[in-house]
Length: 237
Image (cartoon, rainbow, N blue to C red; front, side, top):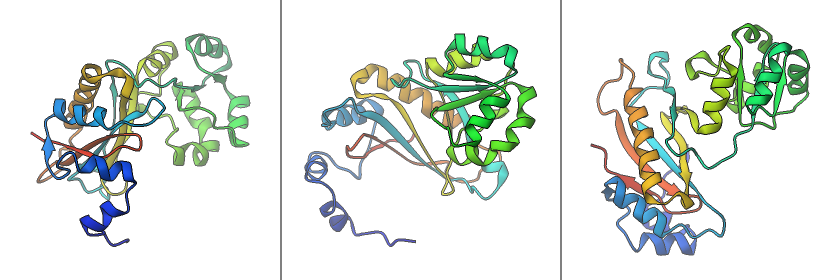
């Protein structure tokens, strides 16, 4: 495991823009959501429409199955990203899936395409009857976080509904091996009000997903940042 750098050396290794940003606010202080977003917007200096990111350090033990975090949330204002969806379904349902917005839909032919390396999509949905067939490509979809899962709401016969929800801004997130959840809550162009509403929805979803077996402090740290921007700590109430 890589040793942590002292704070002063860590800052020296940052870009000039990041170092200047950290001089303008206390990076060790935890701010209320409105102030934290204000700071994030102030230091979003990219020439493109940067993504707003959030990172939760949780007091869970990922080694235990009953402490895994995997849930979804529908963001009030979406993510600002066009979501490409693949639908694994019986051939007679493919037309419905494509009409709902899936970039590809079908059964055996689509599975064969993915088995050959095609993964040009951001999310995957499936009908219950197709799940046994997806075992062939589980090693392709699983590591990329693309495997449809009933707990995430991506396995359903109502393809029109779930595809519509995903395109409207429903996102799925899970903890990594260190008990950290990384996800996004919009674009900088959304402005403070929409970002606050999206952020509040994600924080509430994490609260609601607290495992019953978790002990001690649940939300240890919350940090937000824009793409290539400084991290700002959120006050955890």
